[in-house]
Amino acid sequence: MGHTVMKLPRHAELWFPGYFRDRTRHLLGRPAPKRLWVSITDHYEPLCQKATIETALQRVARWQEMWPRIADAAPRDAADRMPCYSFFYPQEDYRAELLDPLAEMTRQGIGDVEVHIHHHKETAEGFIRKISDFCRRLRNDHGLLHDHRGRMVFGFIHGNWALDNSRPDGLDCGLTGEIELLRDLGCYADFTMPSIPSPTQGRIVNQIYWCTGIPGRPKAFDRGIEASVGGGTQGDLLMITGPAGLRFEGRLMPRVEMGEIAHNDPPTEHRVRRWLDLSPQVGDEMFLKLHTHGAREDNADALLGTGGRPGGLEQMFRWLNEETQRRGIELRWASAYDMFCAVEALTGPLYPGSRLTSELAGMPAGER
Image (tube, rainbow, N blue to C red):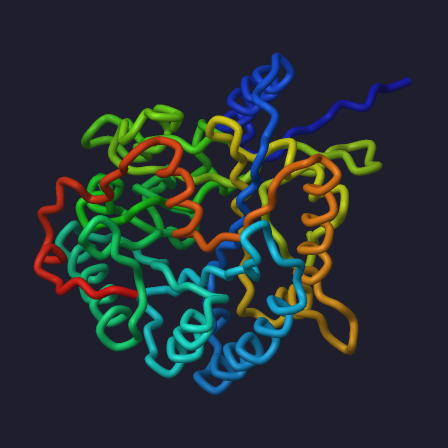
């Protein structure tokens, strides 16, 4: 009789040793969390799948119609706040008419906009110009992005997961040294990881940490120092990662958990519990960073609801509220920037882009 052998996902050699170490540390005991911060980071691409501008406008209009209702219906957190959704919008797809509705939701306090990019065979000069120009447009034309300690900053997600030229074949980026450039341009944190089962996945999982990679080598986020209470800035760029690991949920063979909410992997009560077991902590505060691609119709159906059926977001907010109450944990809804500020409150003052050398240094500051 043959034996069933558990087959790990492709490229598990990148993240499974880190996951094993994380589970060992968890079993040995970590501080019981007193507070949970929850942020949804959307790789928000209205023009994806070669959509026309008319289709893209319909996609955005659907979110502008449905998201305020869902946010208003969600349980309020410990600060009496509604959830705040972070739209990471692609630089290469900039259209003012697609950003205006997102800016309106930001002014309502239920949305926020950060930086996303898809690129290939990039140069340092090209990257600086693209990010600088995009940030100017977001600020000057739409009133977006945040000021932190006297200067404008942004959160970042890399398209196709290929942060810092991390694909072995060099596709979908090409820019070794991207981590340092993001630091200098004013990126307060990167939210790209996890990227399982992509070969771009980093070796550090379930941590909020500082990149300490070797200059001149790609994938600088493969090495790092974990953020700690009172530790301050300890590397080039802060990485805020989502939960990564295995979940069984009544299955003989496990499924990979990577904090993605989608039509083929919607939120469940079991996943909510697993997220709280896997998410990074700094001291006794836990940080749950989820991600999705919410503009496309299949995922929008799953998240927002369709045909009178409630969407996954509505159910997820209720389950998170119930689970944190059951565990005696204070619940806080957060934008990506709110999550960064919560980390900073624990570590001590952080200075995104403190070694700024780019043309962004000359941008006018503006209060949000």
